[in-house]
Amino acid sequence: MKHSDCENSKSLRVNQVTIQFTNKPITAWGGLAAIVEKLLEVLEFYSWVESAFPIKESSNNAKGIHEKVLAPILRVKESISSDRELSEKLATIKIYSDAIGIHYDEIPTHNSFNTLRQRLGPEGFVEIHRHVLFQAYTIGLLTPPQMFP
Image (tube, rainbow, N blue to C red; front, side, top):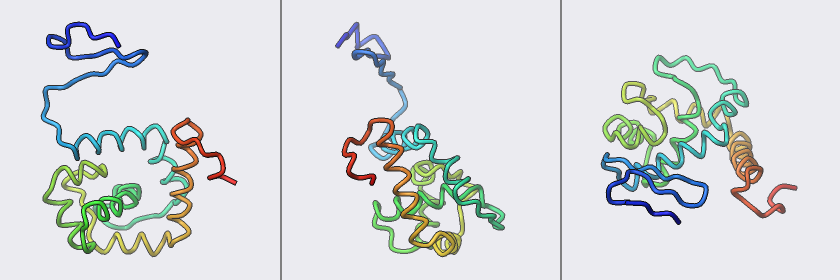
């Protein structure tokens, strides 16, 4: 590890990787959100989910389905009890909306989460799960080949 003047520098070079630092305050949630966002970008998740599930939404604030697919992860992680509470927290806690890529003025209504669940069904969520795992495997993030028959 090369560590040249870390106190005066805003970057650190480790082998082939340069790590950039910021002066912005970052929370554990913010760090996790940034990592997940980058992972989903590398896995081309957003474009894949939009093309795999071409659902036409009629809501005024429907930006795309990928945010609504990611919202249940937030709901489980934060022990949010209902879709209504999820919508309220997305509207009031900026880091939550940032974590799933929703702008504060585009918060889905609580019933849109249920509508999406009904449209996708368990099979749709299984397909999403398998796709993410397979993409992670193909780029070397997962190693057990027996996961994919």
